[in-house]
Structure formats: structure tokens, C-alpha cells
Length: 178
Image 1 (cartoon, helix red, strand yellow):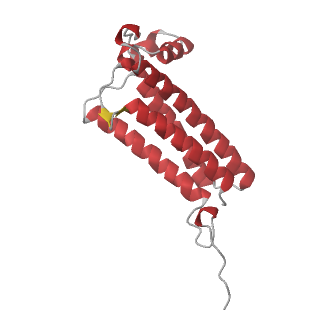
Image 2: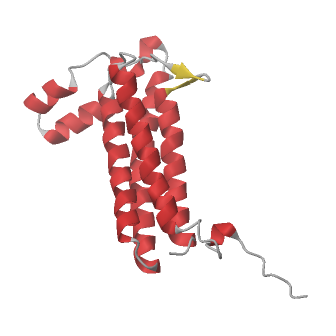
Image 3: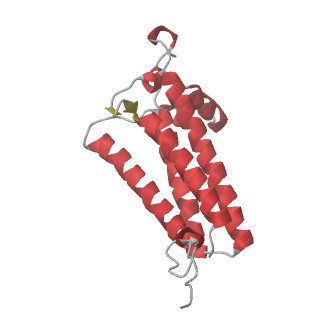
């Protein structure tokens, strides 16, 4: 009787279901679901996004594009590592924006920044670098918590999402087979 080899499904074994392409495609799907929820919250639940929310959406979209490029391209080991680093860096930027948002939400009300102009107005009247500075500084509307799930606000869930996407994107593109 011959022993069958032990197959590690996460190493892209005989079944091949755990490939880089599959994980990258799953990353695209998760980003799309996250963006879909953001628009559901905006248009169905009536939660108007603050400037930091909009920046988080843009960053999630860019992470999704990086996952999509990695899925379509499906490069060999060296190229996959480049995609892994790119996904990790973009997700880290998104996590930084979300962490700033979470920090603003946990400030005492008297320490929260004042409400500023809307993002549309800032983009029309201020130079881009000043608009970025103003948005990342945050405003009073960014400190408000309008919705929670299991006691966590949307920026807290988004922070967790960026961390998971970044770690999974780096891991999948560095460790899994094509």
C-alpha cells in the first residue's frame, strides 16, 4: 500500500484552489463589497460621507485596482512580490487614513476640530496640497459617529478591513504559488 502525499491546500497543492490568482480575485471582490456597502450606507441609510470617508473609499478603490491588476496579470514570483508590496503599501495608506478617522472619533467633544468646508468646496478653491492637508487634519463632521455594528464605527471596520487586505495581499503574493 502506497502512502499518499500530504497535500497542503494553502500551498497550492494538487487541487490548486489556493492560488495567488484566487486570493487576488477574492481581494477584488472584498474591495467591491466594501465600496458597495459604503454607497448603500450613503444612499439607502442616508449617511453622508465626510472627507476622510471619501479618502478611505478612494484608497479602497485603489487597493481593489491593485488586486485586479495582480489577478489579471498573474505574474511569476518576482512580479507577484511587487504586487504584494504595492497592495501592502496602499492598504497601509488606507489604514493610516482610517486610523486618523478613528482617533478623531475618540476625541472628547470639546477637543474635536471645528467643522470645515465640504470637500467639493475645498477642491474648487484650494490648491490640492492644501486640500489634502485640510482633509487629513479632519473636521468636526469626521468626529461624529453616525452608525455602529457590534459597537464599532464604520472607520473602525474600515481600519480592520485595510489591515486584513494588506496582510492577505502581501502574504498571498509572497507565499502562494501561481
